[in-house]
Length: 314
Image (cartoon, rainbow, N blue to C red; front, side, top):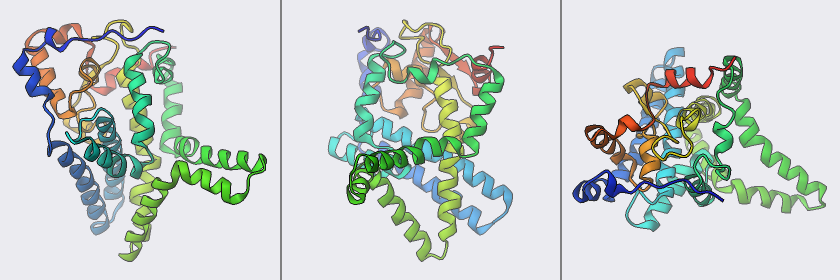
């Protein structure tokens, strides 16, 4: 069972550089989590105060991007990077990052570490996300339409628990047992979202929960998750080279705001040094550029160019 080749930090950084890059922070990760929720709250407030199609559309895009941001910060927690105290790290990653958007740190961690261990190898659990590319423009367009119309959300979030419930009922389990089974998989997500709905309702804004939380989660979030996944590993030049089996995409300010929050675009650096906190990745990229290393890495400018490559067949 082949594993992905590793990169030794000592081959690329001095001892002082690596010590600075890899240092854990008791506040930086927590600030990023707070920032995500603050941006979500401000986007909601702006659209409610100045209701019109433009503010609603911008709010949906901004909130969907921060929902992805919460998932990205949960990913950092899976690497133990949100806080030096592992209990705090896991508590924040589970309850403030993952569960509100339907993800689970406890279930995600082992899965994701397997992705790093076998990156772009046959055993990589994420290989299914990059293997279909390059594809045709028509195929990519159909996928994006399914994302924006909520079909992907229904397939990934709604259909599985319904199918599991039906399967348990067909197996002769009681309604209570079947419901308990679903609650075991979605209970925390449902509890947090029920509390959010109750909070909006107490403010007389029950509708805002659906418009500014569920709609972004069902439309923009799946779309940019797909685009991010494509950019990270699709059509990389060498699955065996640890400097080229993941891609860094130099992102503009607009792309970072609406598509790639919290330094997720530095994906090659993340695979090279997977225990670096996300906020250290831009500095690592700058150091690697100064040393001439990025010339040997898979680095592209902007997401549009990457998507053109990924949809270049036929």
